[in-house]
Amino acid sequence: MENDILNAFKAYDIRGESPEPINAEFAYKLGKAVVEAINPKKVLVGKDMRLTSPELEDSLVKSLIEQGVEVIKIGLCSTPVFNVLMGLNQGKVDLGIMITASHNPGKYNGFKFTNSLVQPIGLDSGLDKVRDVFLTASEKSQVSNIGAVEEDKNALDRYVDFVIEKVELPDDMKKINVVIDAGNGMAGLVVPKVLKKLTWLQAEELYFNLDGNFPNHEANPIKPETMTDLIAKVKETGADMGIAFDGDADRIGFVDEKGEQIPGDILTALFAKIQLKKFKGGKVVYDVRSSWTVPHTIEQAGGESDMYVVGSAMIKRHMQKEGAVFGGEMSMHYYFKEFWNVESGDYAMLVLMKYLQETGKKLSEIWKPLQKYFSSGEINFEVKDKDATLEKILNEYKSDATQFSDMDGLRFEFGDPKIGEAWWFNLRKSNTEPLIRLNLEATSEELKNEKIEELSNLING
Image (cartoon, rainbow, N blue to C red; front, top):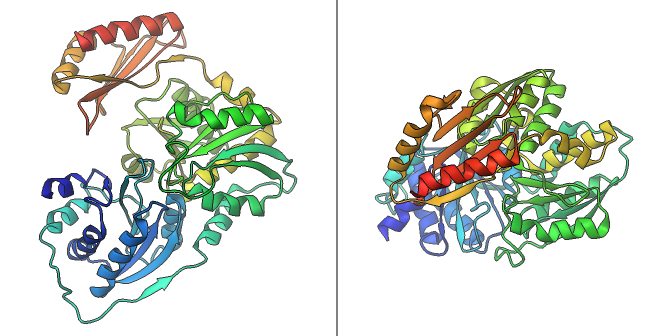
């Protein structure tokens, strides 16, 4: 049991099966540990629609106020709503705790922690201290002053107003028809508020009822099998685009008017182009799995490309340090400077719609020209010894590589795609499973297939 509890503490959040080990008792002890380790005076608390979220919230808040902490409850919300409320409350709250397990299946729940700068708190920035005192956290309150609870009933409206204000939509937006799949997640609460304020946006709604069991499909747009209903509905209705959110609505996937899903890294390139126009240049951060299209598009748009490690928390911190205007990951996380470097699927959706109107083009006409190379997608290999496998690949390819990086796994580049035949690959270890993950791209389908086979034989050999 103790191992289950400690294993729930991940690099940048707490996540586990609920109600065991993540239950009311866990939440109560977590409140004690948070106060002992971090000592916040005022905490913002939000929750998603998972079945155990209400009891986790009740128990966590009870624990916090018993120790004299003031709590602002914003109730049911998406992660972007939570993050933006943290931003709008800068200087008023010390800590934010969001009860969610993001895109994980319904049997999971957990907690995300955010500091007053709207940055994630992980095992390298305070969550380690919470974990260390969790098992020994005192059961009884150490203070005589009971904290207060305040409910912010306008949180969702404040978020929607902020999103619409930041997009800077023209007054003459033309009618656009879309299909939106909320996946029974938190977008089902937030998006209707956006639709109500924007009469030009006509949406066919899929799975907008909140249901922590996720009865229709996993809310995870990076998985093609979760997009089939959306694609079918886009084709059936002749919509201009399809949009899919993950469970806590921070990640977003897009389907064009032909029903083809846009890869996550191509969307990074597209949003980078839009942001660089808005900010008249600047730095854009992208992850090591991304297509050559991303740095090429950034540089053509007058920006500076900055390849960095995979991971939401790492990229957000790096963006802040570098003053970047945008960041994107293949996993469909898109980070905007004007949103404290956090994600907002709602904002990304409206930014893309505004750009469609400005160009007068269809979505397929905007993204397809960016897809110049041939990508493998992510391929997982089960291996007995991850480190030995990476060492073998390093020895095999390093001397022939045009460029090499080991900032996150291994990334090798061979040749220059602007001149002739070229290819690259990235190989990374899974932190939680006996897997290594391969992403590969080439200037031709034939070269891509040849190199996938070559690497597969080496990895499995």
